Figure 1 (cartoon, rainbow, N blue to C red):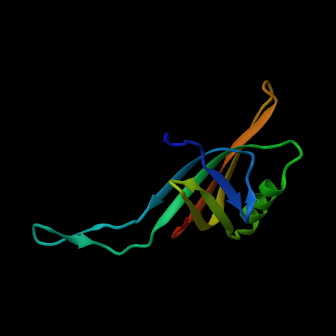
Figure 2: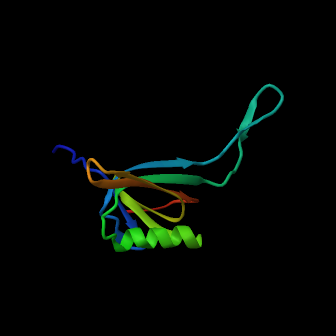
Length: 126
């Protein structure tokens, strides 16, 4: 049987972020090599962090999820994100909206942009 390939979806507080066009999803464990006299002794036990940048189209009349993300940005409150399906799993994080970048194109008649989220440890389910 052939594998199925499709993009992953993004959910904010349980609502599908349907205007998202794509995502860049980065995770780091932030571990650093611990080096002694001439050898690597191991790695540090650091706190994992991550960043997700979601490219989006912005409907002229807005939508509930975009308004939720704008509110979270202005109030510096976390959003419960669900990212998936990634290799058969859903990744869940408490994320903060740290940047909103919007671009208007008069010729094409569109408004697009990106929203940046920062988060800590990921909970994988599925």
